[in-house]
Amino acid sequence: MADESDEPDPVATELDLPAVDADDEVVVVHDAEHGRYRALLGDTQVAVMHAEPAGTGVLAITAVIVDATVRGRGLATDLIAHVLDELREAGTKVIPQCAEVERFIGNHPDYADLVA
Image (tube, rainbow, N blue to C red; front, side, top):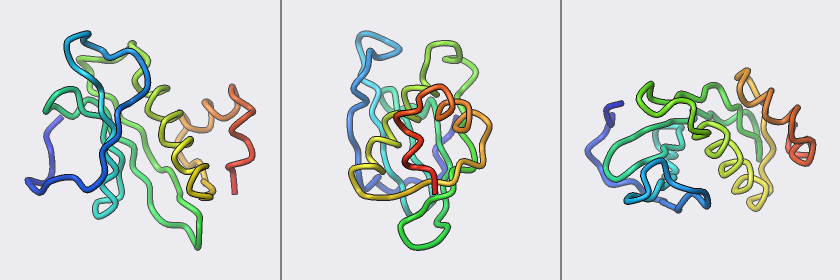
């Protein structure tokens, strides 16, 4: 999955989960300028969540995409949980417009309070 920008990413946090490759850490980068959260394994983007403002203090999550080479390893679930935790800390609500995020929240009712 190619990076759409050569500019450095403004905010990066480690995903607090086992990495896909034990030698590398999965890092989540919030790229607000492009409306996405990127999961990086080393220098490679392995997953992305697209989100756009939907009012004051509300984000619409429109898609979660995982690179085919790392599917089946729980990266989508881990990315969703990580981003929702960050949004909770920031006091931001979400509108899930992506089936994967809707399913995640349905399976984890402790995140239901984030739905706008």
